[in-house]
Amino acid sequence: MTMPFYIYRCVNEIKCCDFCRQEFEVFQSVKDETLAKCPKCRAAVKKIITGFSTVESKTGFDRRAKDQGFHKLKKVDKGKYEKLY
Image (cartoon, rainbow, N blue to C red):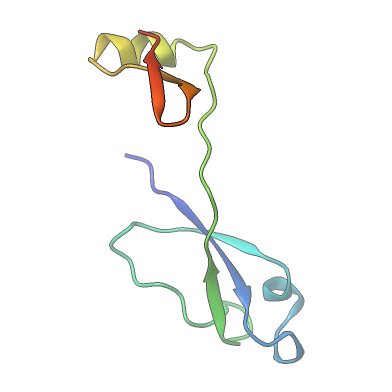
């Protein structure tokens, strides 16, 4: 099972180290608590909300997903989608 990664950044750039001044990634279970402090300097940090992306795979992911009953949709108009498979 893979765990998602989350991006954090310091709250106050004056009180943080070089590590948390830039965004840093942490692999965490969705059940883990959100970090409140930088693991290096203990400055306050916040979780950055990001979008997610999916990438079409050339390794057969689409085929395996289809075999498991999933399907792919393509947006054709506002609020209208076409089932590709």
